[in-house]
Amino acid sequence: MEDLAKTRLIGTLGPLAETAFALQTLQHTASPALFEAWRKTARKRIPPQAAALTRFIAPAHGVILDVPSLVGVHAEMDDALDRLHGVPQWMLYAEVDYVVGSRRVPDPVGQLAYGDGPARTALVRALKTGFSATVEPYWDRVKGHLEARTLVASRVLAAHGIAGLLSSHPSLTWNPPVLELRRRTASNDPWNATLSDFCLEGRGLDIAFSLFSPWPSMLHPEDTQRPFILVLPARPTLQAGADIWSKGEHADHRRLAALLGRTRAAVLESVAEGRTTGEIARHLNISSAGASQHATVLREAGLITTQRHRNTVIHTLTALGAMLLNGG
Image 1: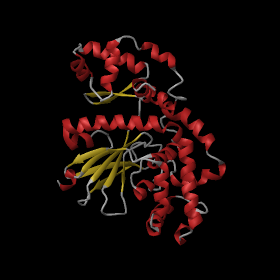
Image 2: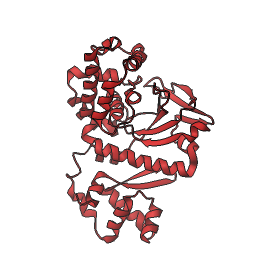
Image 3: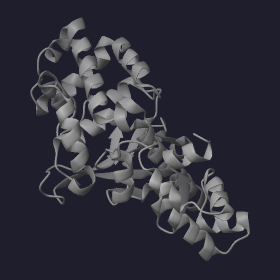
Image 4: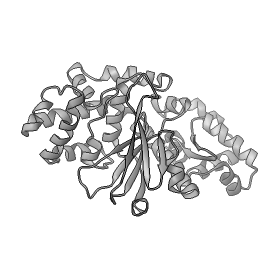
């Protein structure tokens, strides 16, 4: 019960963590309808000399190098990389040593065992390159999607408790006081998995979301004063994904032609706070059918996004919607 009292929703671990998960998604071929266009573009941005390092950091089907646990949560990539530069040598080596049994360590990262400064610099540079190739062009929209998913999760947590939230993914089973996590062990066999039980040891649990993480994972910070981190996948719909990969919020002004009338503008404004269809209807004193119709038009115009979990549906602004509402 002490661990449950220490459970927090933290939304996203920041751009460095999302880069690590994105590099893994880049290496495999899952969810082609959602990610294939992104993969083709991102692969072209990674220079050949960085490719081996990025594959080591996040192989297609192995565990990622757990830089998220090493650096903690940082909203800015430069801050996270500065923190990685300053991580104690023993912690960085312990993490590299943990993964070397499953894959080859490319030079010069293999020299991390000896406190080699150039090796650490190469690792940081590879992560920065990976960020520029996979996440940076889309980060504002990725972050907006994760914030919307966190808002939905907070509603689920309030309505159904921690058990409702932790049972939101088929790989997770909550049998108090044990959280069971089914891990995939073979990419071509979704049923080939191992089952892990987690005891949180009084450290508590942070729950974060990732657009790129393909399955739930548990991160274990070396610092025993920090909570464990459960990362849950937050895959968008195909339409929402297309909006995230699009060239920019300014490009498609024709979509704004769908915005006609004061009521629809009021719906857009009310969605800024994150609302269900029923809450929009009550807030504006309109029918639920009318609120649903206006929300549909706004969503098709790319101005709002809809997150669904079981019977909970919450509308939030997209980056384009926020920009329009704020006069940008």
